[in-house]
Image (cartoon, rainbow, N blue to C red; front, side, top):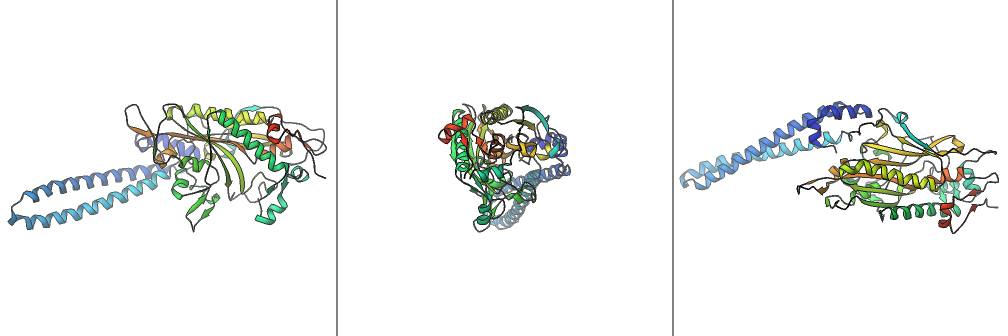
Length: 421
């Protein structure tokens, strides 16, 4: 959640952020009023409790013949303290709900507006042109014996698939190449749980406007994660971290699950938008002052991977209205997909500043010895969706696909994916 002190000191800044996102500006005034009520309730409770403590000493020292009357007054005072305590707790709960309705304030320079209001920061590589009619990844995958959508639908329904043969090897090779790079860049690899408790899912901000995209198991009160970011954020919940040696970095390998609610009829073909996929996610815990620099580093790691896969791409600064509640800034990298004639997202990298850490109580110790929330960042390093761009970009006229040179060692030296008979 946002910093309550920032809410009090600069509500106009938060209102400006809410407006840029297209979110409720009135929510800021609601939170301010709830904060005033909460603090008044706390003062009333503490004053009554102090009065109760002082009166208790009077009762203890009073003569026997006066105690009966004093005890009755003490009981009355105790009842008032109990009521004040309940009122304080209720006011605190109201404030918590109000402040959680406010998204992370965007970083200065983030473009205002919705999904299409992004800013392109750079474009790398020239989109490939063909002297033949290129096939889309679904047709290529079928002919290579790499993707079986028909049987995926038979077994599990729409937006499911099998990766088989060279398709399975290609994904595992890609994920392992990304893992090797992550280890070289000081990420500790983790294979994460894909079921998490509500407080962890809510703490990362995934139970807000996109809650309908999350799978929930009511019998167990657990959520299936759509990214290992959730488990990685919860990994250090309620802890004080030592950041004296720099960022703490993890690379989380997991299967991910998303309902893709509201996307009916969009990208139904192939494996671009599916309910289940694999992903290697980078996650950093850093000092808040280093968060923006770490954000740039994560993007550079992603760009190195895309260049190794010999893909053309662009880096965009995502508009405020398309950030999600936790991110203060997000950079997407979109690769060129030839048969669609456009760029499609392969990676997202978010700077969540201290928003998630406040919810999950993840802190570091300052020079004064006090504790303060850390900053958290996350970013995709490889995922199943990359196969779409790799297959389409590197296809040849006969339906074969050239394996990018950097990936070949992870496929046992395989250079060409050949159509099956």
